[in-house]
Length: 500
Ligand code: BES
Ligand code: MN
Ligand code: ZN
Image (tube, rainbow, N blue to C red; front, side, top):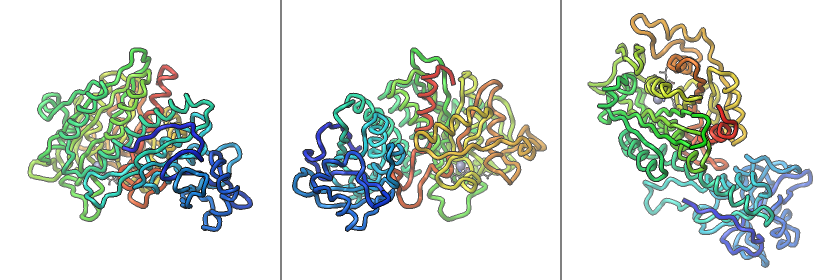
């Protein structure tokens, strides 16, 4: 991965292949942003003029390269747009995205310096995070043709508060590295990542970071009565796993359980998905990747809270041994579910994990899942839905998401939508109900498995988990690591406040 360091050198004296500055749209044209002062001096105060000549406007997402004038030690100046000029400082998400655009544009470059606005610790963290996320490239399968990410990022911070700046950069590095690990897991081809392999990766990474990892294999799942995981996994040659990754802190006053949907490939099963564009269904384990990244990040940040991640891993395939529409599964904890559609598999593996996690009486359960196409129809490709049995928790997660740069929206769980689902003629529940509001129906199904008295929230990341169109800001094509930052922010907040 790209290395990041903090330097208090002046932008003019730093030797680098490229020097990045921010520029914004003012009422009278381009305005150079804080951090660019010495660069502008090297241009004899004409940086805005030069950029305007080249067609730059300062719009968000814009990146314009200029050969560096004498007086700068860098070879090239890259001006990235920050949008409308902001007198009171730029929004943190604007800085993350601008740094991301810069890092992405400079792929193939060895050493780049970021002279973006970075006065406060929060700004430093934003620039560092955006830079490291924007530098991400998934090269596992590319030969010579693959482009190397930018080799080294040097974040230029003012001398004042440089100790805080270093700490902020370290925080950003931990979060970005774990997010990029989640992206790698999502991007890995499904023939190279099955439940067993994912569990092995969790075990190895857990060992590296001193986390306790327990894996239930198919035998242990059968012994324990995990009918949901087994029912979804039994059509595949790659059997299911339930992985528990525990981080504990001696001063923790609260315990959070993060549960991730980990369908390493979702073919739909016997209710097979129609042909065409199903390659993206390798992303159906993005929830498991997110909770895994979050628990490792919590450990790396040393947060004073206990976090247990549960990865509900299975492959949903059709075969002679696959679950059929009409089958009844006995879930962990004893509830029975009539499977009406084998493509509604996520809720089945999650239900087992929710009951299992609930046995340990955590203060809060948050599950993360690429659960429904209906949520994508409702909220589009960049926004995840937040559902909960507790309104305050739902609003809190939505607010935290916004603060860390993730788009989310609170969604209701209207009791009347439960009707079709609870009217299975032969089992306690059916895995499908009302057609309308499918994302909420799925949420209502999960709610049935949450133990009395536990606060629970459900993040449906089916839209933002996998980015298919052109890269933007620090978001590449493919896996995005959606929800990781929200989970980490929630763990941090819980650590600070004592209880969920
Ligand atoms: N993994 C899918 C949901 C999904 C859709 C994820 C688009 C990412 C992008 C899920 O398992 C699924 O197939 N859901 C069905 C449920 C239906 C059968 C009740 C759906 O949304 O169509
Ligand atoms: Mn499905
Ligand atoms: Zn699925």
